[in-house]
Amino acid sequence: MSREELTRFVLTIHYDGGAFHGWQIQPDVRTVQGDLEAVIERISGARRPVVGSGRTDTGVHATGQVAAVDLPSRWSARRLHRALNGLLEDDVWIESVRPAPSRFHARYDATRRTYRYRIGTSRLAASPFHRRWCWPLGEELDLGRMRQASDRLVGDHSFRAFAKTGQPERGDRCTVEEAAWDPWEDLGVSFTIRANRYLHHMVRYLVGTLVEVGLHRRPASHLETLLDDPDTPLVTSPPAPPEGLVLALVEYPEEAFLTTTTET
Image 1 (cartoon, rainbow, N blue to C red):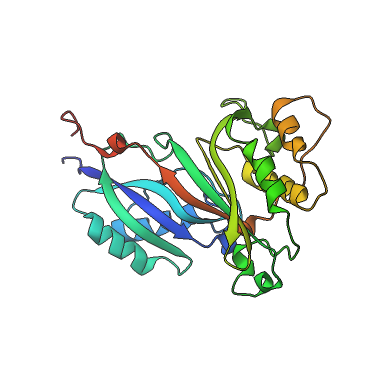
Image 2 (tube, one colour):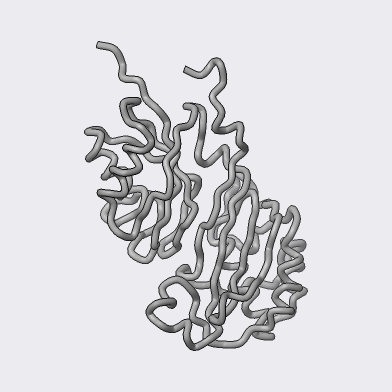
């Protein structure tokens, strides 16, 4: 009996992280990866691993998570897209499905990832139509000071001070290409950060610390000290709550999706 040919499909996924214990599958709790693998097993008749571009923690959302799964080649991208959205719960939605070469890896081929964090400075952010997807701080922030501090993040730095746990096998250096604050409608402010990689809870520790700069509770220069002096007695502020954080975009080189002449 011949082995069935498989096609690797790449999914772009949105999810409201409020009901999930993060992306990565865990026993006895609901996760995004777990939901996807259960639905794929239901439609394909076999348990098939779904490999994500990276983990998101409990309560964190996504509008641009990327994952890959191998399915029998009788499946088309259009058919898989329709089947997944027809069976997944309402808090997960597949934006797109595309075929990719078998060498494509959702995590290791990614070149940069963009996160966004929203903070509600207006009392309107406490509305149930907003508070599930932001930090309803309800206090005014000094955006000029926060921008000054965020400018110090751009470049290659050690972010060890902003990590919950270390990653000795991968090191603690990350290259940040963008770290910017912008108004969020009339509700508050939004932080966008784009980098090649992140450490565990890094964005939330950064936002928590930057908010204290914006509240005039610590100087902007603390960011530079925390980045450049691994032995500093300074510590970061508590991490910002997960509800405001969204994985917005994962980027890949175009050649990651190209089939070579040797691809079978």
